Amino acid sequence: MGNDEARYGWGSDFPTFRGTPARVIRGRLESFIRDASQGQIRAWDESIPPLQREVEEVLRVNEEAAAYGAILEYELPMESRRPDVILLAKGAVVLLELKGKTSPSQADIDQASAYARDLRCYHIECESRDVVPVVVPVRARGYLGDYGGVHVAGPDYVDQLVDDLKERSELPPLTRARFLAESAYRPLPTLVHAARELFQHESSHRGDWQNTWNESSCTPQVLSAMPAQAALYAR
Image (tube, rainbow, N blue to C red):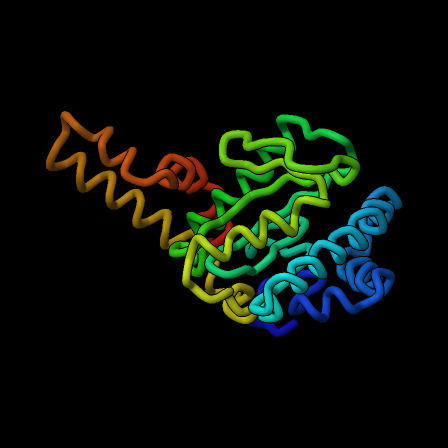
């Protein structure tokens, strides 16, 4: 893990992830998160093998998937939040939140949605790609539905979701180096841009400022987050 990279527990291409013993991957995650609870370790033991099987299925039906990437416990730069799994697929970034249950709570869905929103708004490499949030209750099976843009599916359906994406874009998969570059995640410039856009529009069209607010789905979130992000940069 280089000094100019975001922090993460595991990162590899699909073939390496599929072929590495699950205990080795778990060991890397334990080394990364040194205060992991026994519950967290059990969750890794429960979720890594089925995820490897799904990656194997994608590799079996799509030769391009050899260039796909898998990143576990990616830590959002300047934050401590970590999406469970990021899959770098053709034209898309797939975000998986793995839950040790048969059905997700609304909080689980909201968590995945928030991670996806932040990547869309703040990660420069996600601006031109789909960011696809998926909650995966590891004890469920099949596709359980779309909840406000968040897919919910058992681990056995992850390969189908990933494989379907290859028809939606001609963009090649992101490389891990480009995704993990610390400079790629840029909340402050986005905040400044959103604020400037809002204030400039309000000055010239005071009676219609709501249009600018709605121009970008990121604008309300980035403005509400501005004090916290500014404090981080001031340290």
